[in-house]
Image (cartoon, rainbow, N blue to C red):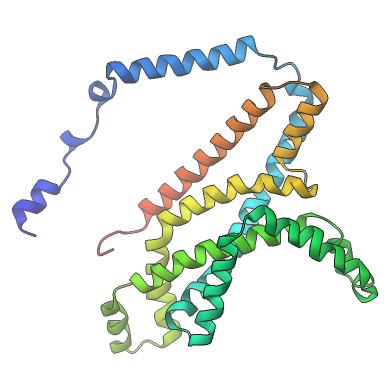
Length: 274
């Protein structure tokens, strides 16, 4: 790439959008329409029930966020070895990892959740050793099965992403690390894993947003998240539109926060040489 091409591709302050270029007639019209819709929803619909259900909604949002972050972190911890073993592992471990990812990605998450809760969960009470163990107070609840199902699903999807990320790290960087005298663990910790995470970060953003949208499925096994609270509101108030609209707004806000957080981390990571 020549200096002239580089200069042509470089952004200058004049290329950035300013107020005049942003406020085009069609954008102004869309902003006005959106504002009118918000005002109409706030004025013409019933929201007198909202203060009474705010504590439940707050608790439901907290449960949803705990489910999201716990399963995403645990799933990513499983995804790293799943992706790594498909790149460097022996053939039998590669085969097992690919079979696992194929089965989990090829079946609905709701089916996996029901198989764990209604299938595996119904078998545990038949074993006295399990009923008398310290795990029984947890295994009799619904949330461990929801955490397990969401974690397994996230690990399978992100494992494929990490496989591509590990394979996409330039071999020259790894060869340079070996020539420098780094051990395999040091090279993995300081070069290979950070570079792979950097390459996978935009996809990880999308997978985390999808994970957030999957958390309402735990309401089908009696976990009281924000979706379950909204369903209860509809049953008690007989309102058709207001609770789902509020639920959509909540998930839009949570999604926006996740996107902004990932964009922040993407910008904090150097991209030179990526």
